[in-house]
Image (tube, rainbow over all chains, first blue to last red; front, side, top):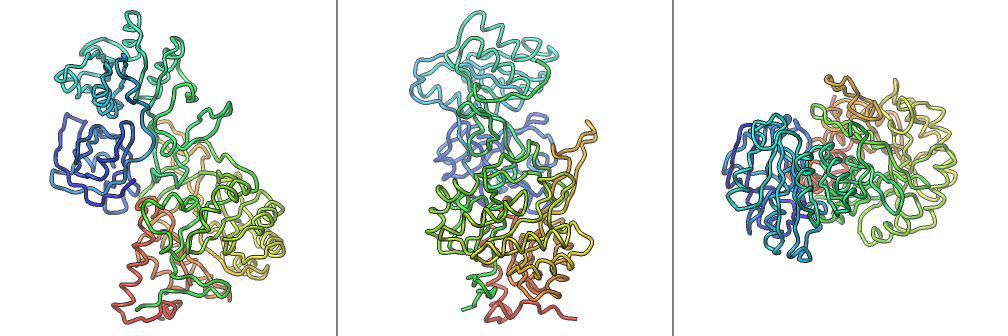
Length: 265
Length: 303
C-alpha cells in the first residue's frame, strides 16, 4: 500500500463513454495483484470530495492501468485528464483473485459485464502466464459497450460476447450466453465482475454445477483502506453473516460467501 | 525551533493535531502512509462494550464538499480491542484516546470500567453525540440533562480524563457545553456530524439505508467553527475543535477561535497523510509569523 501523489498519465484511450488511463507508478505496479484496486483523487478541490476506487486493468513493470466508464462527476473529471497530467493515487488495495500457479493447465472462465470487464484483463494475462486457458465471456448493453472486444481478440483469447439489444454477438445477457456455453463444456473455475444481477446469476449457475467461483464486488468507498467502514457487504463467515468491508477483505469474494441482493432472479 | 505542543491541563500533546474518531479506524490502518508517532494523538473508533454490526449499506453518500455517513458505530467491542488492538497501539509514542459509546449510561460506564484496567490510554472521549444509532438522530448530547447524567456517571467511574463530544444538532450548544462542564468533563470536543439526508430523484428513495446520516467535511466548517468559538468563550475547560479541517489554515482558524487542539476527520479519507501535512503547515505558519509557541495563538481572535 503506497501513496503516489504524482502518477503521470502515460497513455489514454477512449471509446465513447469508456476510457483507459495508464499511470506511471513503479512502486504500485511492483506490488499490484490481479483483482486489487487503486483509489484515485479526481479533483484537487473539494468537489468531488472523496477518491474514487478503480480496479487495476493491467500492469507493466512501471505502470498500472485503469479502465472506466463515465457514470458521474468523478469519472467525468477523470475522463478529461490528459497524457502528462499527474494523478494522486493510493494502492494497490484489497485482496485480489485467488489465481496462482496451481491453475496451470486449467480451463478458466472469465465473465465480465459492462465496465466489470476491467479487472478481468489483468487476470487473463496472469492466467496465461501460469499456463491456464482463459475463456472470456463479455457482455454489454449494446455494441458500443464492448470496447475491449478487439483487445481480447487480437491477443487470441477464446472470446464469446453478447449484447442486450443483439447489435453484436449473442442477443441477451452474458449470463444467458454463459449458460448456453456450459451445455458444451465445464470450466474448472469461474471469475466474474459486473452488475449485481449478472454476478448473482453466474453465482447460481456455478453453485448448481459445483464450479468454484469468485466475484469482484463494486462499492462506493470512503477511504479504500479500512478506516471508514463505509463499503460493507453481507458476507458469510464461519456460518454467520456479517457486514464485511469490501475494501479490506475484498473486493474479490468467493461466490459461496456472498449474500446476493434480493430481486429479479 | 517552534514549540507545537499544547497543554490541555490534564494532558500534554506534542502538537494540536488529533485524528478524529470514526475516521481514523483503530489507528493501524494509517501505518502504511504516516508515522503515527508524529501526531498529537488519535481517537480510536467508537467502542461499545460488545461487538456491533453497524447499519446496512448504503452507509455513505457524497454531497457538495461534504460526506453524509450512517455507519452506525460498528466495532469489535472492548474485549477484542484490549486483546488485539491496544497492545499494538501501546508501542506508539503518541496520545491514544478511546471514543466510548453506550446505549445507556450504564454501558458507557462499563466500557470505561473495563478499559481502566489497561495501560496505554490517555483519556476517554465520551460519544454522546452520534446521530446514526437511534431514530431521528437521538443522542444524550441533545439535552443538557442527559448530557449531565452521562458525563457525571462516567466521570465517577473513570480513573482517566473525560472529553465530552458534543452534537451540533441543538438550538444552544453553549447550554449543553456548560452541562458537560458542570458534570465534571475535563474537556469538550465539538462538533460531531450534522444530521442530514440526500434523496435519489430517480427512485425517490433516500440515498442512505438509515435515511438520515451525519454530514461532515468542508461543507460544515464555518458552522462548526462558530460553535467552537461560542463554546470556547463560555467554558473554563479546554475545547477541542473539529469539523471540516482539511488544511493547516483550517486548523489555525479553530485555534484562533479558541480551540486548544483540533481533530481531523473526513480529511483522512481524502488523503491519509492529512494529519501530518497539517502539522507541517502549522509549523510553517508559526515560523513565518515568528511564533515560538503555538499555544500563544489560542483564542487570540481580534475584535
